[in-house]
Length: 159
Image (cartoon, rainbow, N blue to C red):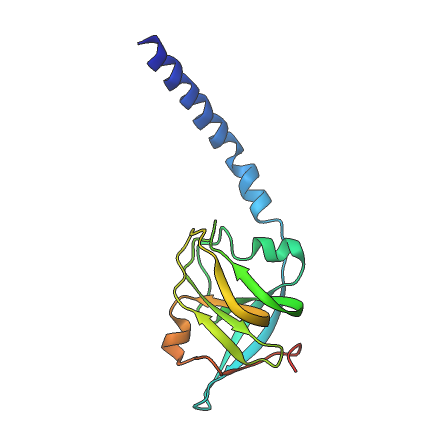
């Protein structure tokens, strides 16, 4: 009985400390700032869709990404920009929003789409080929708008 009481009291202490530190943790989660920009996606059918995106360029910004966010506007996203072409791997740990990940070549063409990624998963999501950027949108956006591999993303940093 004494062992159970000791375990329960330790659990209670952990819960109280977690509760008291939660506001500090939340502030740490929100301290990374992102620049805003606009981009568009032109489908093979000729339709153009505009998005307001946050830019993830620094290591800190790329590490944080959309972690801890609970919502995102339908026409919003995050653009992860790299200085050179490379195979990009990502995961959804601490990301609560299901996302579509559009892997983009240096010329702006969409090379791969990882649709409906699983929130909070640690499964690795790979571009499978060398790309320059990744555009994250709300899950289902690519399918709903008819965005597919080979479509063109227009943004100032793509050739």
